[in-house]
Length: 414
Image (cartoon, rainbow, N blue to C red; front, side, top):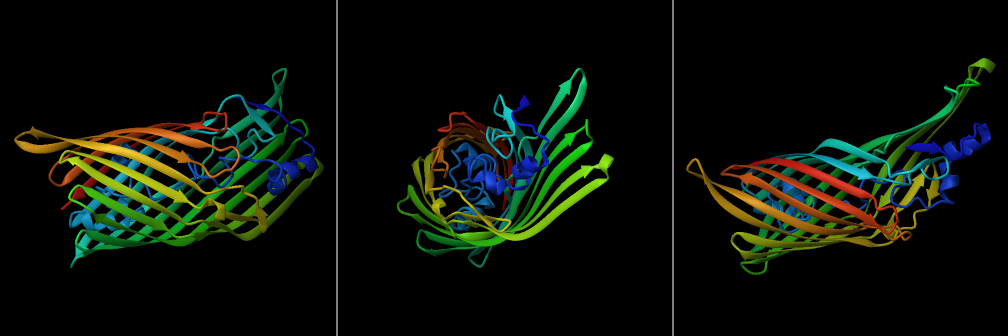
């Protein structure tokens, strides 16, 4: 439940709190959930579909579908001649400090949570004269926040209320190509086009005096970056992988509208503004390994580095302070494949497990998520159905934020 901590209807104070977030943010470290922060983690590097989720979200040294184009496109060269993949998920995250929640306006007794269903990936790949091409689209980041509403009542009469809403997403379209360039060595490169939007609204209503103050912000995102990778078969049992993503600018067209309405006094004041701003996202790189203990059992590991000290934000022409430092994500996982005969046909049931440690970029508090994963599936000649899930908990902030994700993927290969 959310209750009021500071609920003044003074116009000057509200303008400072609502219309000038840059001023207040300089005196407050929000941490995990700045306004532009994606849900769950800052550290995105491609997308883990169901099979990868089950293996601890390891994505650099093994792939069963064309989602590899977004993480290590070299893996495309090891896929069947034609593949088609589709993936959806349900995720839930808890937050504590974000926007006007637990930053001076509204206080929450518990960690607010938000759950989302999403069709988050689709793509295809095909091989032509030794080259493998892929076209994929992914919901790479989500900016939604738990809605907040609070009101002041006295003797059954509501005198004032305040509400907060935020939603948004970032979508990436990737075009990639890969090829085997030597014995046991594959290389790939991807070209990524990003588009997205974010909408935020804070509305304060004084029913007694018939006064409404609202502030709305809309942002439209666009940008481009390159990713690539290598995978080398060191022995019959060991593969090593290298992947990278270039630094790039996420351009933002920002619009703001602050409105003060007092119909009794015949007052309607609108203050609007627009700005072309930039989120400069740093480069990232990762190392991956796959070791085959037996034809049925393999182990995987990823280590991904993010140069977050290079992160820069301008918001309505002002440089925002983000005290970020370099960070990493480490993941390990395994897969054991069980062959089964059904209706005189052989099918394969993979059993997957994994563990990941995801350090967030804020210098204070030094926050990180520890995640456990499980997964399975059914694979037969040309089709595969996979399910993977993860649960995790944050440490460092003192709030013990929680995350979970369940992913279902369908793939076909010819």
